[in-house]
Amino acid sequence: MSILNEITELVIKGDIMGTKAKVAEAVEQKLEATDILNNGLMPGINEIGERFAKGQIFVPNVLMSAKAMNTGVEVIQPLLAAGGDTTIGTAVIATVKGDLHDIGKNLVGLMMKSANLKVIDLGANVPAEKFVEAIKEHNPDIVGLSALLTTTMNEQGHVIEVLKQAGVRDQVKVMIGGAPVTQAWADKIGADAFTADAAAAARWAKEYVTSIR
Image (tube, rainbow, N blue to C red; front, side, top):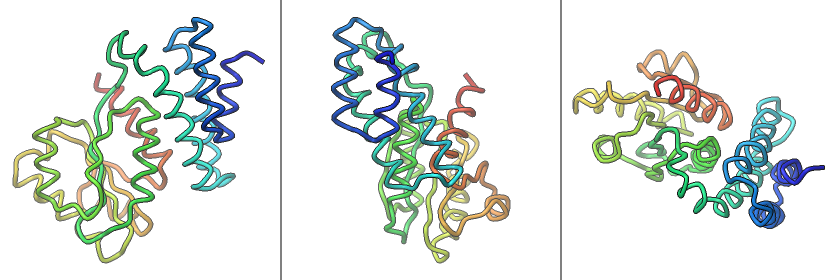
């Protein structure tokens, strides 16, 4: 088994320290940082995303694998930075005002980072005005709104209305998610995308930013 395949397997297992050590070993062997990323780390997290979408594994498995992936990325980050910016786009994400749940949102952030997106995480219980400020400051491609309660779903629609009033709605694609959220709700409030899980969110975001570059 090649060292890149070993890295892939370690990411799938969620072996954080093992991934870090093996990536460092690959660097010592003079493998290109982009090669380690694209042919070692990424195949592992992509496999995890597919298994999660099929219901074969659960959130804890995905979190561990995403952390392993990100630990590996940290090792090669200086080399990637030396070769230019590897991020393909920017996403601002947060859980909306009135909702303190952040596990799902954090998972989306990890998966998006694993897909080479720069993620600006505003946290939980975030008012609509903060999204407007973040759009003006960071000029993101995507804004992700999470709501885990039926009582806070309406806030997703409110955020979209505030973005319109502030004149920044057309600058971004708005993605929504959360346990009670549906495609019908996304259509009703004028969101651009609804994704049922973190892997799907990262996949949609990556496909969108790639299509506009």
